[in-house]
Length: 482
Ligand code: SF4
Image (cartoon, rainbow, N blue to C red; front, side, top):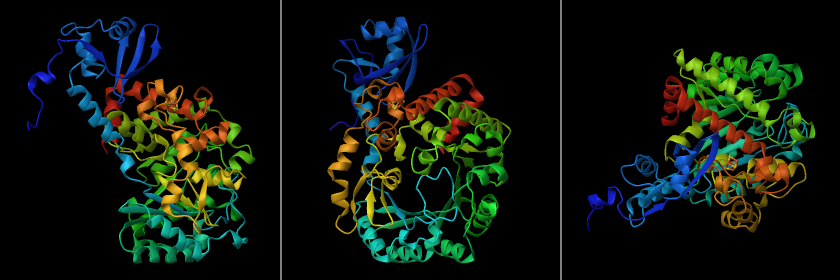
């Protein structure tokens, strides 16, 4: 059998033409942004778009070549274009072959911080009934090892997980004794309790550390109160010690944007640079846990956050132009989707949604949730995303539960109102937990969704920079290729 199609399969169509799927959006009086089914963008004038839709194009007229190159039109009997699109789509969606690579163990809900934006509804440190038991942990490992993935990541969260460090050690030891999987470990900690024993353990077991850093000392300490008001000092000292002991790439930091952060993005980025970190993830507050109870979540809207984000992104590009490589990680994820066909497993940027398929969360009491946000909702009385319990469920029964299948199938962007015709759909994601939390519906009404507004705002901004500023576009392209 011939390995390649015959040359005429790739030549200009002379027979009837056929449109390929595409979405479009008006961007100006006479201008449209058009995206093919794998999200390549092209600008067309209104007259061009009308001619294309009416198939009033022919080889040699310029528009045909433009539309053909953008996979918007093909010969009715020509297979090559469709096969190419199918291959690209298959590559983009291949994250579906990697089911549940992440398993989050909430080893305790206790915490010695009292952050008003806390999304997990932590408990005070002395309430040890909020610790996971060893029996629950071993059952959770049974479920995690039931996942078909050859490599899984086990992440320890809280509360503050180091308050139950003995259990973390037991889980790591038990997981390593079980055959059949490669393992990665992460501890998500505020680092206030980091000591030599923890660092030694992380080094011996190749454990990554992930922490929170909201910016300069006064901002961070305001956001993250603890006795002695020294959260920032402890986090910074912890980051430095961890980088020295484990290596610069073995500790990462995440920031959360509060109302107090909005005017201070340059200082926040400066703090990350000062500590030698190679990038920052500019994150909005999530509508869960204490962030809702204390009304922190309602203190700024999507437009204010987008203004904050744009200022931050432009500052980061300036830093790169001055010779220091530094990334904004959310932009890097989106750019990978926009400029390549590499699959992205990031749970908020995929459809079908990453709930359950991307991660399972084992709560301290043995309840299993489809996502970290799902367990945050449960702490405030909403069990919608509680899939089962480690005592009487297996990996299969959790993943095939009606609850999970219902949430995922009802939130697909590919067929959701607004999303299915959105020019950014290929690069966006379904976020059923967010939309359930904010609108009481897994699908959500997208014109009222802050998630949607942020997605459109950021992707529009990135496209604008890619098209108007060659020097910044080169930096963004490097992020996508990293
Ligand atoms: S959530 Fe918004 S930006 Fe994303 S695909 Fe749907 S309509 Fe488009």
